[in-house]
View 1: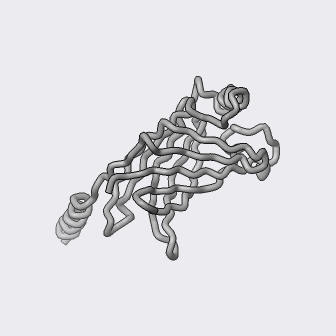
View 2: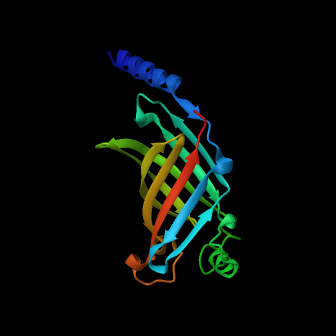
View 3: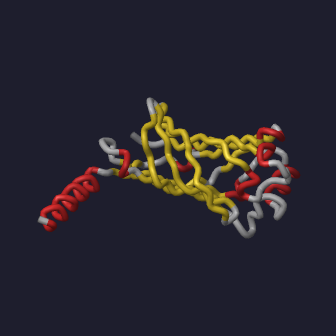
Amino acid sequence: MKNIYISLFLMFTLQSVAISQTISLDTKNATVAFHFISEKTKGTLTGVKANLTIDPSNLSFAKVLGSVDVTTLSTKNKMRDKHLKSDDFFNVEKYPKMTFQSSDIYQEGNKYKSKGILTIKGIQKEVTFDLKNTDSTLVFSTTIYALDFDVSTKKKREKSKVYVEVTLPYNP
């Protein structure tokens, strides 16, 4: 009887994996936009690399793995960019990449969410992104606290709030 359950489990697992597909992302046009809310500082990062594997009939098998090159950070102010890339903030020489690896993609009401581990400066925190699919573009958005990742001069966590939006065009 135990062998029957194991066989059924393997059969269903293999069928689910067989219909999963990796979506071709247009990473050349992908961006990460950020807005340090208390500072009114906005910027972008490019150099996005990402893989998305999805089974449209079962989101529980979906996986997102992505990174962004922090050295591409731009706020359109060279002095500020240099300071943000320094040891005071992102320390890009030691930590040139930020990464995200999903642990769960799920539907909540009429919205989709992607929960996973965000790593900035070697610090890992669980975050949940809202996920939208619009005009062949996936948009992941969330609010994080820079202080949680040691990227803030603010002493109060609430003052280090950052809105993040990742835009990933794809080829349908």
